[in-house]
Image (tube, rainbow, N blue to C red):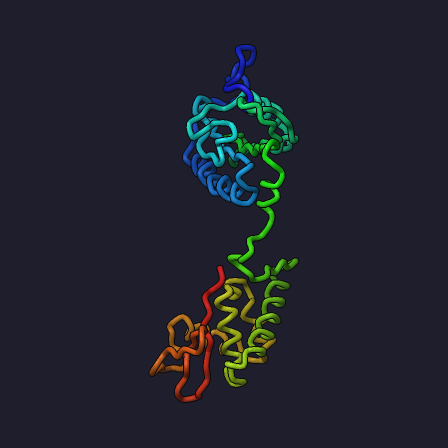
Length: 268
């Protein structure tokens, strides 16, 4: 966007810290590459995301998504407008520019935002530029926000206000889920609840085991026992014939107790 590099009236040396980058600076910038890809996937193909490294302004673009809107690619130089945004943010409290409008070389109207990337010393080492093409048909933009007819994931997301609430809400939902499953006998419900919670990653949260034990009225040692059994694949001490299939669902059949423990894929 705008012209590449500054005009002769303003030297880039006036704007940049000329100390060489350290390895930690490169690591910080590297971590933002996933941000570029993620934002592009979330916002859509009408939005260009560019990650600039200020180590070398002549080839500052080190990651770019949807670069066809401005014709840029990895290795493209920084623009004078991006440097102007950098000048405004250098030494300031804010690391986010105001939204601004400009036109690419092709003439398309862009709405843009620039974010300064700082290291631990608060030195600006990179820029994350978000450029939305406003000349793209609105219907194309709206299609980005419309779910597909067959969603890839149909599960609800639990937006809890704290980790304690997250454990509580997930636990209550899991209890309802298991109680509604007629394939799980009463004697196996607690074990199944613990398995489901384990597969959802709830026990990665501190003190979750105590919360679950209190709610299920079992000891935390029992919860630990179930988890160890799940990790080792030993649900009953000994498993003679592991899998029985019922319809489209797979499970573990316990010959001794005639109890079925449903096994579901662990949530991401």
